[in-house]
Length: 115
Image 1 (cartoon, rainbow, N blue to C red):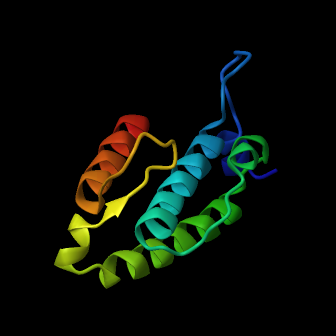
Image 2 (cartoon, rainbow, N blue to C red):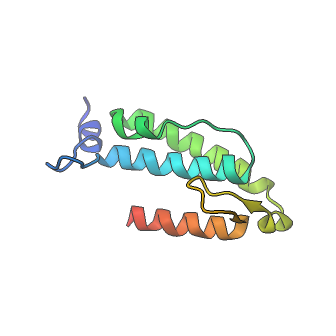
Image 3 (spheres, helix red, strand yellow):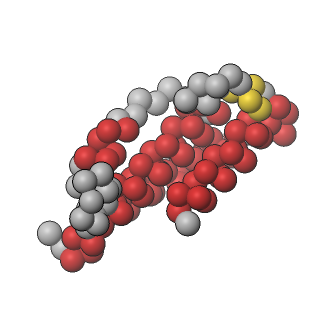
């Protein structure tokens, strides 16, 4: 394992601690899901548990980031101003919200996770 891979897969000595790499992978996965599936209407299956269990490599993470940027960019550039008022359902339920409110919520939540 390359030194950077070892750093990505390090976790604190705690029973329920996640690795940095898994947290990055999860954050990319949830953002990709909510933007492409919920907002863009592109059906996407996601293995949330896998994002926390599979060891992360620098190479795999870079590929995931490139896929993330391409798919998110493609979805967001297709949005028109009127789309911001469409109603969508958050993945965890809780009713419906507008695309605009949902995007603000996603950005706020991810910024808290990323520090």
